[in-house]
Amino acid sequence: MKHALALCLAAAPAAAEPRFVDRADGLPVAHVYAGGWEHFVGGGVAVLDCNGDARPDLYAAGGAEPARLFVNETAGPGAPLTFRHGGAAPLTGVTGAYPLDIDGDGALDLVVLRLGPNVVLKGDGACGFTDATASLGLDPGDGWTTAFSATWEPDRQLPTLAFGNYVDRDDPDGPFEACDDNALVRPEGDRYGPPVPLSPGWCALSMLISDWQRVDTPELRISNDRHYYIRGGHEEMWRLDPLAPRTEDEGWRRVSLWGMGIASGDVDGNGYPDVMLTSMGDQLLQFNDGTGWRDAPYAQGATAQRPHTGDDGRPSTGWHAQIADVDNDARPDIFVAKGNVDQMPDMAMHDPNTLLMQQPDGTFREAAAAAGIATMTRARGAALADLDGDGRLDLVVMNRRAPMELWQNATPGTGHWLSVTLAQPGPNGRAIGAWVELRTADGVQAQELTVGGGHAGGIAGPLHFGLGPHARAEIRVRWPGGGWSDWRAVDADRALSLSRTHLPG
Image (cartoon, rainbow, N blue to C red; front, side, top):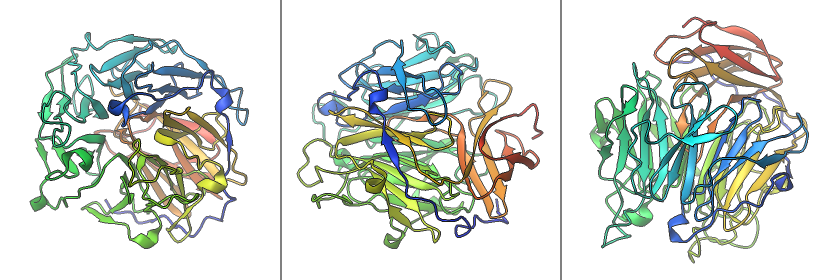
């Protein structure tokens, strides 16, 4: 589709330097992602409101240690972030988790990725969870699962699930060139059918199903780690119907990198989702025009290839990435969690996380040190989410062999904002696959509601828009399988819930 109004990057005023306050003491325990080489990767965190109180909660992978649920008890907007220990079953071997309402009952569930059988935890709407894997007919597998994505296909009672597996631990010739197959699982009525192999696998570490062309045809993107496939592998894009990988003849440019994570978002304001791919060495930002991707030039300032502070000049290792507006200036920013795999001598050991703030000219400026979040631990998963409801995105960072970090966004002078939650009748009650557009005098911002991406963890929460100086905007929704709603004027600085029963389309 064409956008008559492109986002005017130069329109918003300059905001103050981003600033975060350490709130790790608001967690009831120092949580660590631990374990041997099978937990060199993974370490994700799921963000979800598991009890409907509009305060996002956290489910944190533990690796060899138990995973933990942290229930948000923050007193109100701007109050110190505070969590209590939740009551979820203390599973071990957890590499990550993704929240979604898998059975359409209105309560968020968790798809838990593990070293060994995966688990679906059914939520009861009060932060209680029970194992629903068998009742859904889902084959849990017994692999090393490190990636996940999901979408609702037409006329299905349950979502289609994609599982990404890393090295096949049973291959006697491994671990190198021993990547396991991935799997796509489709529902058959109210239960799941057998998994369909996505073969060959190239050691997946991130997956995302996205309608990247905006033609109501989602496709599965897979980011793979060449450390183990070594040669012959590449980044992948799979059509879902009919199920088949895109080829070079179809314009899919083969890229091989140490793929760790995928972040998706409209960085340049043209209405199509761009991607940030994390890796060892350069982080790769790719711009999407609806027909394909082009790599951002080095001058864009997004490669983040070496530590930006400290005296370790070796290349960086990027893991979780997220595209989000940290200062609400209507320009999406990029966060990248960084850290050495373990003791890889060619890579930086002191590798601070990266916060790339988008400038009016579309370039990026590193701000993590000034923001106070440039820690030197081995980061893995992360999430930017408004944990206290004040309209500023807070930050949680998962670390390997070091305590989980919790940061409260205290940036002064931020712009106006809007958070948007969608609801519709039917199994896909949270409208996964919808597009939301927000329009001001400066142009249109577009966001897609997806499940997947990142590194071993995702967010089921409102879409967050920064509006810069604008206290009002217009909004419309393209609902899954439907058309656009009409434009509707809304006030900024609030949480907005939109229902398909109230908006045509």
